[in-house]
View 1 (cartoon, rainbow, N blue to C red):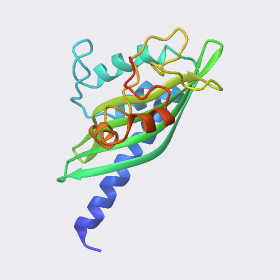
View 2: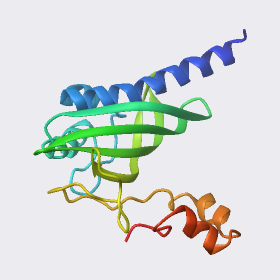
View 3: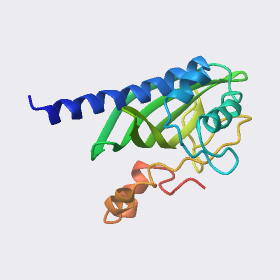
Length: 187
């Protein structure tokens, strides 16, 4: 096997570990581990700024919104872009203990990764989801967001994917109505 193939395999394995480390960090409330998953100059928005302490200040209040959680990574697509950059999508099913409810969320993380000093880390991680709902309760239109007491963004999937509307644009509306009670984006 040539050296470049080995390097690509090593890069993919290291990047896959970021998704697992992120899930473990959230579920164990290990902010030190969370910080390690990010590049040293990660930008966490105006409210938090740049750097690893910004990562900590971004995640700490989020993790206070629910008590227990279980983030199950279910698939990871990685696209290497040169030697030190990559993008990826991570499928995840997350469960959150929120008061008397266990809330399920179906998530896709859209990631940007970078290698700094030989270590891969998250540069950016965009949380996108289909729904949030208490266990045993089907996601309900129009918003598909049913997390009691939690104020968060509305689901953006599947309509965030440009291919979604393109696929369904040629299908008769009555066929779509037969598949879904609310085929439009969350409102």
